[in-house]
Amino acid sequence: MKEVSGGYWITSRAGLAFTVGGLSAIAAFVIGLAVSKPAADRMGALGQEIQAAGKPPTPEQAAELGRLGKRTADAATWVALLVGIALLTMAIARYL
Image 1: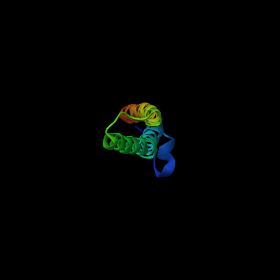
Image 2: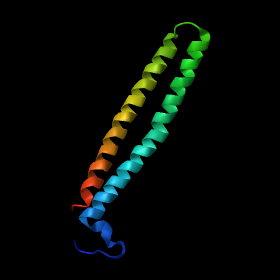
Image 3: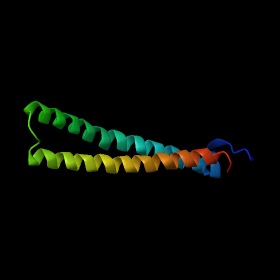
Image 4: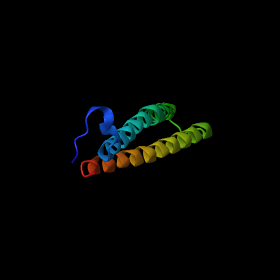
Protein backbone atom coordinates (compact mmCIF):
# COMPACT_ATOMS: atom_id res chain seq x y z
CA MET A 1 0.00 0.00 0.00
CA LYS A 2 1.36 3.38 -1.00
CA GLU A 3 1.87 5.91 1.80
CA VAL A 4 -0.07 9.12 1.29
CA SER A 5 1.06 12.13 3.29
CA GLY A 6 -0.52 15.46 4.09
CA GLY A 7 -4.14 16.02 3.23
CA TYR A 8 -3.89 13.97 0.06
CA TRP A 9 -4.87 10.74 1.81
CA ILE A 10 -8.50 11.75 1.44
CA THR A 11 -8.27 11.38 -2.34
CA SER A 12 -7.07 7.78 -2.04
CA ARG A 13 -9.67 5.05 -2.45
CA ALA A 14 -9.45 4.13 1.23
CA GLY A 15 -9.69 7.80 2.24
CA LEU A 16 -12.77 8.30 0.10
CA ALA A 17 -14.38 5.18 1.56
CA PHE A 18 -13.70 6.34 5.12
CA THR A 19 -15.02 9.81 4.25
CA VAL A 20 -18.24 8.47 2.73
CA GLY A 21 -18.70 6.15 5.70
CA GLY A 22 -18.08 8.91 8.22
CA LEU A 23 -20.42 11.34 6.49
CA SER A 24 -23.11 8.65 6.28
CA ALA A 25 -22.80 7.96 10.00
CA ILE A 26 -22.99 11.68 10.82
CA ALA A 27 -26.06 12.09 8.60
CA ALA A 28 -27.74 9.12 10.34
CA PHE A 29 -27.03 10.72 13.72
CA VAL A 30 -28.44 14.08 12.61
CA ILE A 31 -31.61 12.47 11.23
CA GLY A 32 -32.07 10.55 14.46
CA LEU A 33 -31.56 13.65 16.55
CA ALA A 34 -33.53 16.09 14.40
CA VAL A 35 -36.42 13.88 13.22
CA SER A 36 -36.81 10.67 15.21
CA LYS A 37 -36.31 12.01 18.72
CA PRO A 38 -38.79 14.92 18.49
CA ALA A 39 -41.40 12.67 16.86
CA ALA A 40 -40.94 9.96 19.50
CA ASP A 41 -41.09 12.55 22.29
CA ARG A 42 -44.33 13.95 20.90
CA MET A 43 -45.79 10.46 20.53
CA GLY A 44 -44.98 9.79 24.18
CA ALA A 45 -46.55 13.05 25.31
CA LEU A 46 -49.63 12.39 23.20
CA GLY A 47 -49.89 8.88 24.64
CA GLN A 48 -49.80 10.32 28.15
CA GLU A 49 -52.54 12.82 27.24
CA ILE A 50 -54.71 10.01 25.90
CA GLN A 51 -54.06 7.87 28.96
CA ALA A 52 -54.83 10.77 31.33
CA ALA A 53 -58.13 11.38 29.54
CA GLY A 54 -59.07 7.74 30.17
CA LYS A 55 -60.87 7.32 26.87
CA PRO A 56 -59.96 6.42 23.29
CA PRO A 57 -58.00 9.00 21.30
CA THR A 58 -59.91 11.68 19.46
CA PRO A 59 -59.77 11.57 15.66
CA GLU A 60 -57.27 14.44 15.73
CA GLN A 61 -55.04 12.61 18.21
CA ALA A 62 -55.25 9.41 16.20
CA ALA A 63 -54.36 11.27 13.01
CA GLU A 64 -51.39 12.93 14.71
CA LEU A 65 -50.21 9.59 16.06
CA GLY A 66 -50.41 8.19 12.52
CA ARG A 67 -48.39 11.09 11.08
CA LEU A 68 -45.78 10.82 13.82
CA GLY A 69 -45.55 7.06 13.36
CA LYS A 70 -44.97 7.45 9.63
CA ARG A 71 -42.36 10.16 10.23
CA THR A 72 -40.56 7.91 12.72
CA ALA A 73 -40.69 4.92 10.38
CA ASP A 74 -39.41 6.96 7.43
CA ALA A 75 -36.57 8.35 9.54
CA ALA A 76 -35.69 4.86 10.77
CA THR A 77 -35.49 3.64 7.17
CA TRP A 78 -33.07 6.44 6.27
CA VAL A 79 -31.00 5.90 9.41
CA ALA A 80 -30.74 2.16 8.69
CA LEU A 81 -29.69 2.83 5.10
CA LEU A 82 -27.07 5.39 6.11
CA VAL A 83 -25.68 3.21 8.90
CA GLY A 84 -25.49 0.32 6.43
CA ILE A 85 -23.53 2.50 4.02
CA ALA A 86 -21.21 3.58 6.83
CA LEU A 87 -20.68 -0.02 7.91
CA LEU A 88 -19.95 -1.31 4.42
CA THR A 89 -17.69 1.51 3.30
CA MET A 90 -15.66 1.53 6.50
CA ALA A 91 -15.38 -2.26 6.55
CA ILE A 92 -14.01 -2.46 3.01
CA ALA A 93 -11.89 0.70 3.15
CA ARG A 94 -8.87 -1.11 4.55
CA TYR A 95 -8.83 -3.43 1.52
CA LEU A 96 -8.85 -0.65 -1.07
